[in-house]
Structures are given as structure tokens and as C-alpha cells.
Length: 543
Image (tube, rainbow, N blue to C red):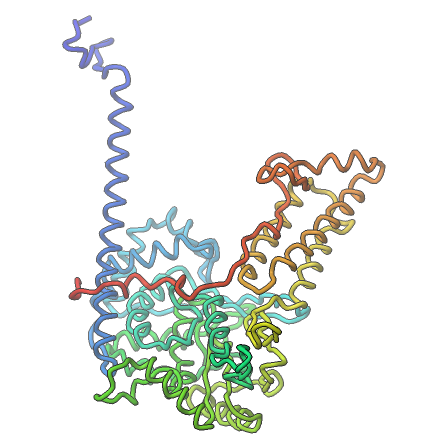
């Protein structure tokens, strides 16, 4: 055996061996280097794509009446395709297959990510790419037995291409969307739409007694579009796209997606209207088409074509002043608030004005987009009676101290539906599982419900009543599960909470009952809405 030199290596049985632990350290270093390389490439792609988006956003803001002529090179760039692939691969729908039966995991195992993207890039640049029909799946509508909502599932390849289209189109149109539109836009949510609506309904003037008495809006038009995503006119949508996109290859590809069709029960159905349901670009295209609603009320929303050189304020402030002048002069004022295809129009005028505007708006929507309002569900309601919007109840309440004030409340029907859901999951035919499994099942529902309604007025009272009901249902469920056990033995499952030791609740191991009453209840603030990353740049375009 040779003598080791410096402990670097020894010869054992005519074979060279590393010192103890050195091989593992080398492997760890190689793995760490490879991981850093992947992370660095990923970061470089994200920075480059963000730079392109910032350039498009800045250009769109500075040139609202022009169309971008060439984006095909960006669209077919590997960095954009990789960016879109990562978003598709990290989405929950990665396990859903289209008509080709391929999921994200199958592509990784059979083809490989890089080869898949290389072949897709070649198809796009050669003009050989054609979208596949979407696989239609019927989703039951919650609370409506026997009714289904059609959902299209595109192939993974089509999802990656649609994601790349959205990456480039979103900054251009995001710079043009009005601030009263909240649906499917980055950084915006239903809570932002409801808070803007609440602030719009808040009376600004006070009487001699210090109370708010005069209502800024007295009527509301509750808009309901029949089959919005299925009935958007392709011709009108493409015309609106051409105002901002002049790249013929990009427009041709969007047109192919609109006409790709769906496959339902092995039967091919043509799509002569509507946007690809379930597609990544479908919400963006719907927002582009439905922008005609805000454009109709430009005078009271945001001045763009009505700008004047002498004005020192921006379009939103000019519209706000126009609302004040018209209201003071006794003229009718209309203010829309839209979340995708759900919208309301606040009316400062008489009921006759609101009914006339409802008919005029329906005609304008039919002529501009091919969509129709549902005559049964589109109605005119007095603000003092309250109305439903996005699953919330908005009403004007009188307080003897402050006068009228708008409130966003939890509808009684929604609380009743939640109780019914809990009752269904704690019936006698559900006693086979353990308490921990039942708690996990119910907690998932309660946590999502509390997160959605935590910004409502007096939500704490509703949460507390539901907690009492859930506790009682779990007690009844345990009695059915253990019919021969004594009550004191069953009550041993009620243990001190890990969050508050003074409160006893149903618990098994580390899994305990989720209490809605512990959810912080507060008013949502518009300042919480996040500005998109591509809109944060304040300097020159960096791409």
C-alpha cells in the first residue's frame, strides 16, 4: 500500500479512492452549482420578460391611439416560452390533460421540457402550429342542482402558447383598462370592487344635524349577461384588438384560437362565437370586449377622448368633477363598477331614467359585442332596498348618529348554504372516517369562506353563530359515530386549542376545529391592491 500524500488520496487494491467524505462533498458542490445555474437562468428569463412588459406598458400609456406592429420575435423567443411554461407547470391545472392526453408530468417524462419548448418554437416560427380543440367538461353549478357550467380544457401546448400571448398583450391593455374594472386583472379582486362601490355610495354632504342624508345615487342597474364567454362576437373582438395590435401573425394566431372549437363526448363542435373557455387568454379577451361598458360612461368614469389642453387635472379627476357638476345641475349621472361579466351601474336620477338607460345599454352591448342582457336577471333596484353583487349584499343603512351609510354584508342565503354544506358532511352516512379527517374536510370549507367574507360589516356576529352551529354538528356527528359511548367520554375529544389554551374545541392530535370567530374582521382598503410589476418602472424602457 502506498503512503498517502497529504491525505488527498490513497490506493486501495490498485484503485484510487478519495479521502473520506470528499466524494460526497464534490457531488454536493456539483448539485449546488447546477441548482444555482438553473435558478440564475430562471431569474434571467424573468428579468428579461419583465423588461419587455415594462416597455410595452410604457409605450401603451404614452400612445393610447396607436397599435404595436411587431411582437412576433418576442413571442417566439425561448425566454417568453420558458416563462409561460413555468406558469403552466406550477398551476393546479397541470394535472389536467387536453384532447391529446398529455399532462405536464407526462411531457417531462416522455419528451423533456427543453425538447418540448424547442419543438414548439420551431412550429411557431415555421407557421406549422395549429391549436387543438378544447376538451369540454361540465362542472356542476354550486347551489343549482341539475345545472352545469361548460369548461374547456386546452392541451398543455396550447396553454403555453396562450400564456405567451397573454404575457405580451396584458401590459398593452392593462394601461388602457379603466379603474372601475376589477375582474381578472393583476393585483385586483372582488374586495377592491366592493370597496370602491361602497365609497361611491357614501353620502358626502351632511345636513344641519350633522347626519348624512342625501344619497349620491338612488337607483342601481344590476347587469347580468347571458352566456358572456360563449357569445362574444369574434368580429367585434378582433376589431378591438386591432386598435392596439398590428402584428398580423399575432392576430392570426388569436383568430385560430377563437375558431379552434371544442370536443364534447367525442363530437367536434365549432366555435362561431365566444372566447376559449378555460383558456389562459379567455379572461383577458373578455375584459377587452366588455370595455365598451366603461367607454359608454366615459364622462363620469375617466376622460380620455374628452380631454382639453386647458385642464390641469387628469382624466379621473375631470370625470369626478363632471359627476359633481351634473348632480348639482339635476342631470342624471351613471357610474359603472364591473368585475368581468358581472357589473352594476349606479344611477343618480329617477327610476324612469334608470329603466331607459337599461334598455339603451342592452342595445349598445348587443351592437358592440353581440352579447345580450338577461331580461329576467337584469333589474333596476332602489339603493335603499339593497342589491346583490359578487355574492355580497350591498345596502344603505340608517344610523341615528351618522345618517345613511353603505354596508357590504354577508347575504343570509350564503350563510344558510354554508350551514347546509356542514350539515351534509356530518350526516349519519359520513361517520366512517376519523375525527381528524372530518375536521380537515370541514376546516377547508370554513377557512375559504371566512377569507372571502372577512371584510364585511358585522361579519364577526355571523362567524360566531356559524362556529356554534359547526360545534353542535360535530357533537351530533360524534354521537352517531360512537352511539354506545357516554357523553363524558365523547367530550374528551374537546381539548384546549393550541392557539388559545383557554378555549376548548374539537381536536384530534395536531388537527383542531377552525373557528371563524378568530378571523380578523376589518374594512378592505383600496391601497391594498397591488400594482403590477410591469407598471412600477419609472425610467426609460429597459428592454
